[in-house]
Image (cartoon, rainbow, N blue to C red; front, side, top):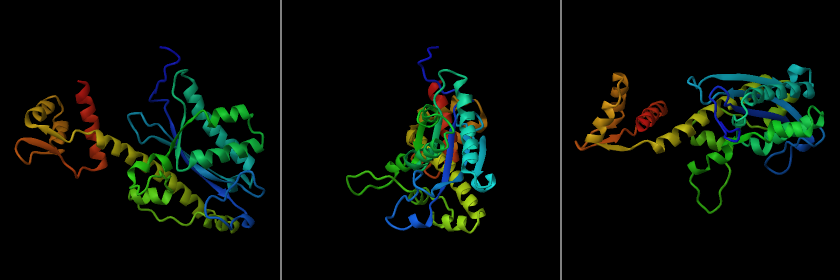
Length: 286
């Protein structure tokens, strides 16, 4: 096989879902609404974050390696914490580089290409943890699945400008029910050494990233599912299913309301849609 051919080996293809928390000193907390964290300003630093290493193509898609890193567990040493974060990312790259034509590492989150990756690069550069070339290879040779842009087509756009979406907008759109405090409240929590809510909020948000990913995949698959079959074609598809349970499920997914056509059941859950999509893809190939 040519080395120039990009391959997705299931046991090596990884998406790292992650979210970081940044400290902003009190003198920089007022002013314009928007991002206040800046890795190049005095007094700003990385508090920590949660990382999920997700093998998206394996047969057991819930396999996730979870790691979290917090500055209070490193006696306040941002440098030591960053060393462990870089080691975790390098572990993923080492799995990938064992195959010369394996696709690059994926990073996924909300706003990560704009903020989180840049912050990791800047703070690692500050402590000279790797050369600039090595840092570029670790972060910028990866691929980004940034939900703040991916989900734009799922929102109604009332004008001619495409707009990125915030975490709050995304979880509301996808009906992810979770109580979220204000992002800037964590700075006061950190000042008061109230670390538990910082960690819990962050870990919940990364868990939500995986939920968002699965919802987006389900929506894509749902759009590709065949919406109706004629009676003749439907029975032919059923006969191609040798597993009786699978055949019964396939029949459950379609309603024969007018006697001539079988129509897709619009009340299928996301899990049922995924199962139906896999069945239809297999039928297409046979």
